[in-house]
Image (cartoon, rainbow, N blue to C red; front, side, top):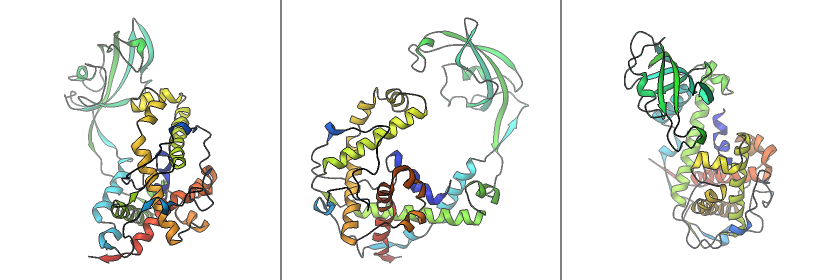
Length: 360
């Protein structure tokens, strides 16, 4: 992972870094025109500059004063605390823990276990760690009621049986609902305190950097970029919108449908199964219907950034695409969509900050 590409990486999940603003009279939702799917063309309906075709955004939005505004100096600097938080997030992926073998499992311990589950003497799907071990925290990790409590008092190296009853109903596998199961448990070890780990050139290399210093510099750039976007959000909170063209709402809905269907396919599921498992909604249609406010807010955000780009003549060049780490997006989603993201996530917020007056 390259920190220069973090902003770009969020686009499919609903444009994580897009500003979300309130809007007055939103107009037609365009619900009858939702035709998204796994073959959604992300650049269709966009101009070569990354604008929505046939839409003059400045006709729909009223912008607050955005040039020459006071910009706190802190927006342009990555604090030591924020830098360390990002480094700690990276190091968490490399953290190893002390392994304890010489005492019994306590009621709030984290332990690594293996197990084999049987119902009526026969193993069942999903009831076996296959010797790979799994780490659980007693009283925290969601397991069948009574499963983890029965680990307490045993020592690493012990193998023993426990008996539990699956809930009725048991949604992850209805065939197991209400059935009694016997699990043969092996305690591998008790997890102790984290062992010290420091940022190194080797870790930096896994993120595509030649040294830890280069990675740190890139993290600082990313923090400042995010802070500029947050500042832009705060300024644009006063923007108002007369209505939202239905075509933009349709586009955003279809984009999310495509994302959901693509993710479902990657897990070997249909879209309804995926939505039920990961969101709690029964169907994809039900989930989409629940997202009305999100679609309106995101559409308003696109209108606001497009309006400023129109008024100020802000364009995205091929050099910008490379500079901001979006090259792969052009291949997958097309250049117009890539430019749309760069305008919303980088160029327009950057313009507002850089045209401001820095204050202490």
